[in-house]
Image 1 (cartoon, rainbow, N blue to C red):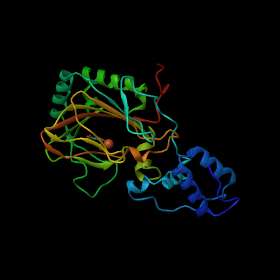
Image 2: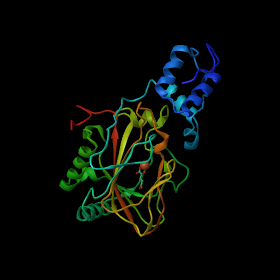
Image 3: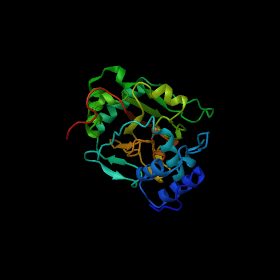
Image 4: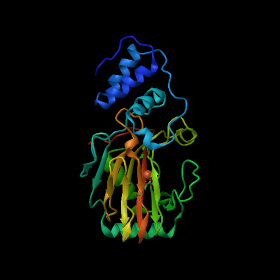
Length: 284
Ligand SMILES: O=C(O)CCC(=O)C(=O)O
Ligand SMILES: [Fe+2]
């Protein structure tokens, strides 16, 4: 980490310094430590939160995020890997893919259950774009179904996280023309959304998805920051960490359920949380 100036109390200079060092690949924790010990007592930072996720990808945003969220950073919930899954993406983002997670038979049965009891999907923040998320959601957990319970347990086991640290399992169904536009699954820190949704069970940590039925065209899961398109192959599962290793939110996790061109797509989604009862991780 290079020191470009000494004992400066100028916040802009320090932010610039943090940005340069982040771009050079220095560790965010070291940068923050230096700022805490040698930087200005009170960094003057923007008062408005960046409005879009593109801006969040800028390295200086990482520093900004870190300084501002230190009070509410959840504890680390990071499996080292996911059993039998391959790691995709880059060092900035943990994304895993597991083929043949579920048999075609199980996928068919679950698809039937989801299509028989689904309702319009909702969003955690109000959105003026009515096409933002147009899929249907099925609250599978409320069915008390044996197969659903087994899949739920398989997901938790595969990540190695205690299912008490999770939200109830859901199904999503997309018909032709339906989509879920670019978004992140974590709750935006310091917002109403965070206050409303993270209060009890904490921040969202991991997302786990299983593809149950494949559309004829379209319907990928697209991670735009990595330019990775995951096809909706029946039985395949993906899992990603919405947080960085220090527990702050990871903008590289931004993703989209692309529009269905023809056919239907059905998936299972399960979000893990920062808080729960008992040990967070299974011992392996
Ligand atoms: O359907 C997809 O591929 C993505 C779904 C998604 O991002 C979500 O439910 O949060
Ligand atoms: Fe998502």
